[in-house]
Image 1 (cartoon, rainbow, N blue to C red):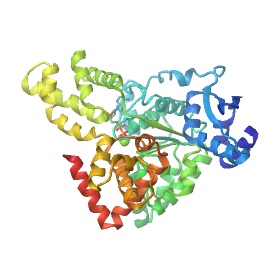
Image 2: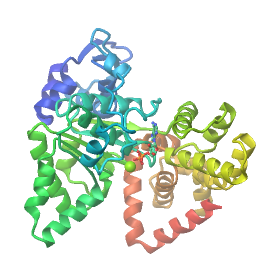
Image 3: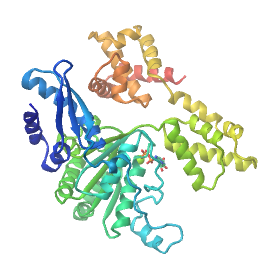
Image 4: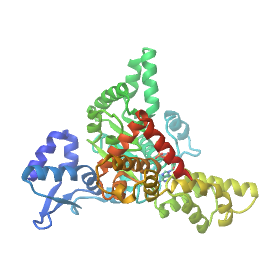
Length: 449
Ligand code: ADP
Ligand code: MG
């Protein structure tokens, strides 16, 4: 069966991707009673990739092949050198950028990169360590391994930071490398302008000659066929030249509306890695680092307090620190917990709506449609239940930071694809169905209170 599965996958993946994920990956044992199939993979990144992208395929293939069930379990093979992934080596020092003469040179070449977004200033935590490891691997070894690298996750979690860190690292090692960073909206605008101004050759030249292409927030390519076509050719050119491509998005490629099939499949050739919200410990570490770099003296209790007030978005966390700092300046007072509490009172109100629970959404939706939470979590396929259920899933996706699998779990253990389908369905209905549109609108108002 293993050979069969590999053969199947060999047809789906190109050679580089196949080697990255299947070479050095082997079954170790199969337990006939529990159906557990233990598979040894070479490093934690491969483990993450298999879990996210291949375990379903493996299960389905086993079923189709011999009508047997497997429960894949992935183990990192201890014999393989894994240090790089376990503890990413500190990046080679990027040239000192305070007063050194290198500075102007460095900055001039990289107007598009924010000089603060380096590996040095990036704080590692549970939620981002795989992404950081992958980014370091790519920076060390561009174009060979995880190509493309696709980093996804919620707003303000460090996607842009990490992506640009790859750019800085590459330029630190190869100052003449051509690093192109672009917001996907800019790519769209540039493209449209190039058609208007008949400068398409220049447009193509700019992107297709990059050594490293960083495309930020690629979800904006949704539903834009012309752009996708153009990007496809850019992608092909760079990929075939073994140039590294890194993309970020707030969601998986499969969740980007109307993203062409060929882009979806190409984006999966490399590595797709998620950044999830930081835990308290990481938030404190980020604040501490930030405070240090600003020369602020803040005691642990206050750091702890600020970190506990902002839970999901690092940009807001930084904003909270700025607020506290401003408050201290105005009041001419030292920073302590009381001052931080005063400074952040209004923030707390905002956070309340952010901290919306899925259970709350279910309750409000069930009430609104005069059904019950249990029905929403159940399996009934009648329209009176299906529509409220899909709307509740839509709202859970829209108003909370919960991942698709997590939402599925909260709805009686449904598959993440069901949630995704519900989300897309309602998103479409809002545009075409006045009743659904107003229901969603009213529900959002109710939940706002
Ligand atoms: P995204 O692109 O995911 O929306 P950004 O990369 O813009 O998020 O990050 C938002 C802010 O938070 C930036 O100022 C960034 O430097 C900071 N930040 C995010 N993650 C980290 C981290 N792990 N360590 C230090 N700063 C971080
Ligand atoms: Mg960003």
